[in-house]
Length: 184
Image 1: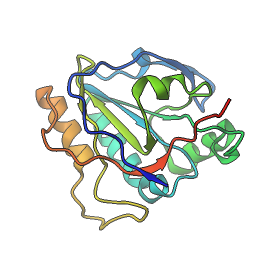
Image 2: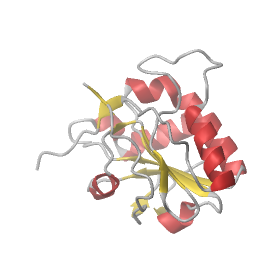
Image 3: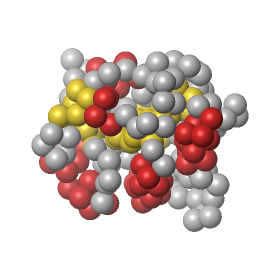
Image 4: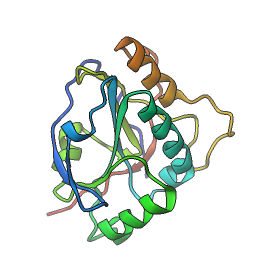
């Protein structure tokens, strides 16, 4: 079932975390924070919404990192029910697509809950002061990627945040598969 998260709660603070990455290291928010802002993405391996844009996510993340934006991806799905989203599969996914950012596993789902993540993909764009400025979509893609020359909404918003500290007032929420919450 497709889920659409709420609109941006401008100024909401980010949440610290320490989570294991696919490279065997543990990462905290301080390890990935960029001097001009930070992008926290909730994604997973199996979601068709993520898979349709994964190459665009990697492209935009790499360019944003070069512009001083810290980037991290977190998977919080229940791997008992969705084993394809487990740590070993995450590692393979990161290698397959050449992630330039850490891909972290939120086994307890506490980080996803703290952020209020609802779907994959769910993007949280923060300014250098840790204030939420963007909670929108990557572009107009849905279960299928839109045209290759589609407006890069996330990239443009994060670039604006890097330059001004403020995100765009008008944002279109992301849409994707619901986070697969554990039942126990």
